[in-house]
Length: 329
Ligand code: MG
Image (cartoon, rainbow, N blue to C red; front, side, top):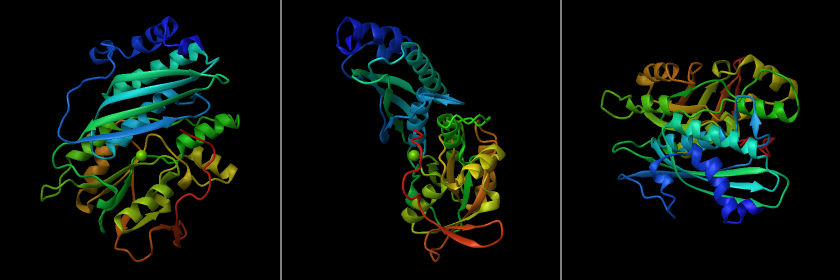
């Protein structure tokens, strides 16, 4: 509890763990608020991370808390710039584990090109849990308008890789099932920066909508995009990438990879003519090698999201009902 007192012990905690990893001029000034350069249009987002376990195959709470916030900024076409983080530490939290999480967070922020400009720690009673909230600010260039409502009939639907990896990795850890499935938690900076540059022959942005496929999985995300745009979304079961390990794992537990979340995959709607260029851009980017075009946006008629199954039947899909077990972020 002393570490949360605001006195010498708090300073030691901050100095020995946080300040060392998040070394930059803004933070080092240790002022009450960060003063940074701005721009005309900014994107802002915030998210809290309560996943257990704190470390898992392919990632950890620190990396996840950067990816979640950075990716949400990217999905509006913003360039991520600044982040803040607030740690809530329960009494008994393992300091060596905390150091690893903070180190991982700093490494991921550096990869994503964001700097951490403000932070906070609180120590509360409890049993050693660690929680973090991150807030991010990104700059949105003139002429960029990427939004859920913008998808149009005849757009093609692109996903950046295999579905369900993060969910399957967390569930495997929680159920002590041994396998090789790793979380896909990743900042999607490179692929989004390439996607934003693709123009139609009229000079418009070819990408209409971007969403990261997180909680609720592809089925939930595409249901939301169909509702926001007022269009139908038709996807082809055979074209949706799922790794064989995740497919087997999901089959064993009776789960549907379409409703299993990721933390490093996006779905995009792109003008049909530019879709091949968009696919190539994502495939040539870090974390995008398994990207695929999985369907198309259509005029309204079937009432939202429709899956064409491997056997050729059509099945209407809705958002995830009930709780998507377990907490994955
Ligand atoms: Mg999101």
